[in-house]
Image 1: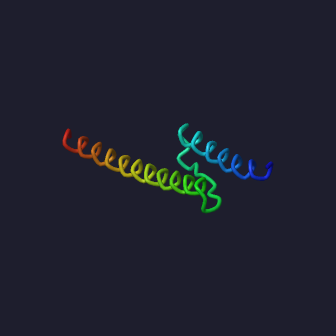
Image 2: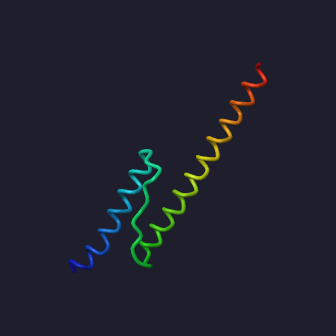
Image 3: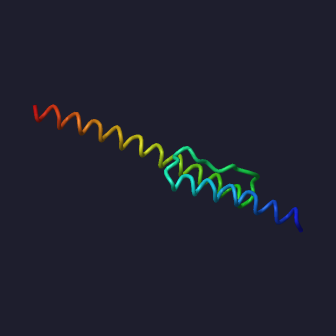
Amino acid sequence: AYYLARSITRPLGALSEATRRFGAGDMTARAAVEGDRSIGEVGRTFNQMAEEITRREIELKALDRLKSEFVSSVSH
Protein backbone atom coordinates (compact mmCIF):
# COMPACT_ATOMS: atom_id res chain seq x y z
CA ALA A 1 0.00 0.00 0.00
CA TYR A 2 2.84 2.37 0.86
CA TYR A 3 4.60 1.77 -2.48
CA LEU A 4 1.37 2.32 -4.41
CA ALA A 5 0.56 5.51 -2.53
CA ARG A 6 4.12 6.79 -2.96
CA SER A 7 4.10 5.99 -6.69
CA ILE A 8 1.09 8.30 -7.02
CA THR A 9 1.96 11.10 -4.61
CA ARG A 10 5.60 11.58 -5.66
CA PRO A 11 4.82 12.39 -9.33
CA LEU A 12 1.88 14.55 -8.26
CA GLY A 13 4.10 16.49 -5.87
CA ALA A 14 6.66 17.08 -8.62
CA LEU A 15 3.94 18.20 -11.03
CA SER A 16 2.47 20.50 -8.39
CA GLU A 17 5.89 22.05 -7.74
CA ALA A 18 6.45 22.63 -11.47
CA THR A 19 3.07 24.32 -11.84
CA ARG A 20 3.78 26.55 -8.82
CA ARG A 21 7.16 27.58 -10.21
CA PHE A 22 5.74 28.23 -13.68
CA GLY A 23 2.87 30.24 -12.22
CA ALA A 24 5.36 32.32 -10.23
CA GLY A 25 7.15 33.28 -13.44
CA ASP A 26 9.81 30.59 -13.82
CA MET A 27 9.29 29.93 -17.51
CA THR A 28 11.87 27.14 -17.43
CA ALA A 29 9.86 25.03 -14.97
CA ARG A 30 8.87 21.67 -16.41
CA ALA A 31 7.28 18.59 -14.90
CA ALA A 32 9.27 15.42 -14.43
CA VAL A 33 7.42 12.96 -16.64
CA GLU A 34 7.20 9.46 -15.26
CA GLY A 35 5.54 6.55 -17.00
CA ASP A 36 2.69 6.24 -19.43
CA ARG A 37 -0.08 6.40 -16.90
CA SER A 38 -2.46 9.29 -16.38
CA ILE A 39 -0.05 11.24 -14.18
CA GLY A 40 2.68 10.96 -16.81
CA GLU A 41 0.23 12.13 -19.46
CA VAL A 42 -0.69 15.14 -17.35
CA GLY A 43 3.02 15.94 -16.95
CA ARG A 44 3.61 15.70 -20.69
CA THR A 45 0.59 17.90 -21.37
CA PHE A 46 1.82 20.47 -18.84
CA ASN A 47 5.24 20.53 -20.51
CA GLN A 48 3.67 21.02 -23.95
CA MET A 49 1.54 23.85 -22.61
CA ALA A 50 4.57 25.47 -20.95
CA GLU A 51 6.57 25.23 -24.20
CA GLU A 52 3.73 26.84 -26.17
CA ILE A 53 3.32 29.67 -23.64
CA THR A 54 7.07 30.29 -23.65
CA ARG A 55 7.17 30.30 -27.46
CA ARG A 56 4.30 32.76 -27.66
CA GLU A 57 5.86 35.03 -25.05
CA ILE A 58 9.06 35.18 -27.11
CA GLU A 59 7.04 36.02 -30.23
CA LEU A 60 5.12 38.75 -28.40
CA LYS A 61 8.34 40.31 -27.12
CA ALA A 62 9.74 40.33 -30.66
CA LEU A 63 6.56 41.96 -31.99
CA ASP A 64 6.63 44.53 -29.21
CA ARG A 65 10.24 45.36 -30.04
CA LEU A 66 9.33 45.80 -33.72
CA LYS A 67 6.40 48.01 -32.79
CA SER A 68 8.65 50.18 -30.63
CA GLU A 69 11.22 50.49 -33.42
CA PHE A 70 8.49 51.43 -35.89
CA VAL A 71 6.99 54.08 -33.60
CA SER A 72 10.46 55.44 -32.90
CA SER A 73 11.35 55.73 -36.59
CA VAL A 74 7.98 57.27 -37.51
CA SER A 75 8.19 59.86 -34.74
CA HIS A 76 11.57 61.07 -35.98
